[in-house]
Amino acid sequence: MEIKIEDASIRLLDALYGIEKQCFKLEAFSKQQIAYLLTDYNSVSLTARVNEELAGFIIGQIEIEQNVPAGHIITLDIAPNFHRKGVAQKLLQEMEALFKAKGIKECRLEVREDNAAALNLYQKAGYQKAAKLENYYPNAHGLYLRKNL
Image (tube, rainbow, N blue to C red; front, side):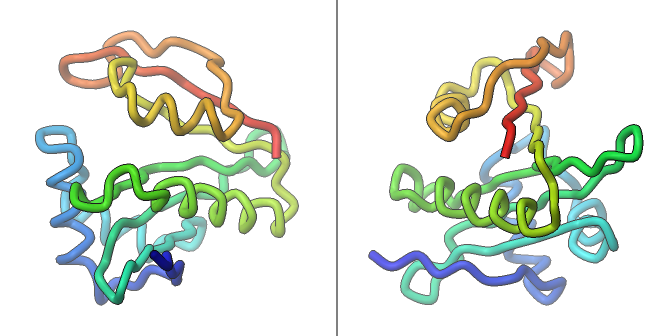
């Protein structure tokens, strides 16, 4: 199974929003939020295709904190029929490589405390818990994870 990574485009907004709703239900970003993230100057967005079918996407942003750039994974979404096939891992690796190429030395993200699959992915990729985010999500706590690139 070949996973093809490409730059995301605003033309894919409807499809990306559909995957976002499948993945995050009540906590999903709105279509307008995704459109903003896809077109924001500081955002980096990638899609994954398997046999020409859209399998998932990742959106990250470059943030400046105390004059130091950092990568921030905003969302990583995989269509349900592509779970556990290496798509999320490939998107994450590609995003980290893009951040590194821009001179970024740290990547961070937030994840639901009870999202075992995502936590497993991030821990295998080398992310470490930096803080607990009380009531970060409507019905759950979050975790703030970081990784040195």
